[in-house]
Length: 157
Ligand code: 5GP
Image (cartoon, rainbow, N blue to C red; front, side, top):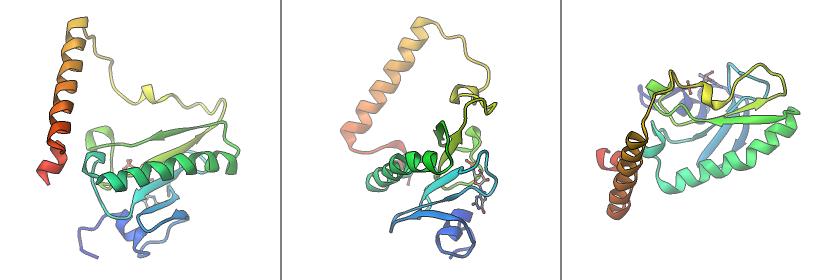
């Protein structure tokens, strides 16, 4: 394992212990070492990709399929009322480990937590025309990348 391997690659390689709850050839799920709730689980691709846009399609599909199947299993295992499922996608969003991971955080009635809307800072005041422009920019960029069969991240790598 190279010196700059991520801590999650080291867990996937068995070099650092973790409480593993699910494993395939491509994907690993294990309990977070500093859980926000009982059953707080991280799901990773074994290979390190920093952001979700970097993931190959097949890995992304398997990662999401694991989240979809594990989430109700975790809820049942810890008798949770719900779950918050999220990704800190980049350092400005609070990502500390530069290796894509989905957080599955069990939630309980009256646990004192907030919804996912609480993670961003001050809400921007956006006019209708600004919203129209933003939507049009995203849509046209998406159309271009779809036509090229690529993405900004794929082009950069
Ligand atoms: P991030 O801020 O990158 O989305 O979250 C990283 C998560 O990884 C944190 O919730 C942190 O507790 C967890 N974590 C960091 N190092 C380890 C480790 O060595 N083992 C496990 N199981 N979790 C870790």
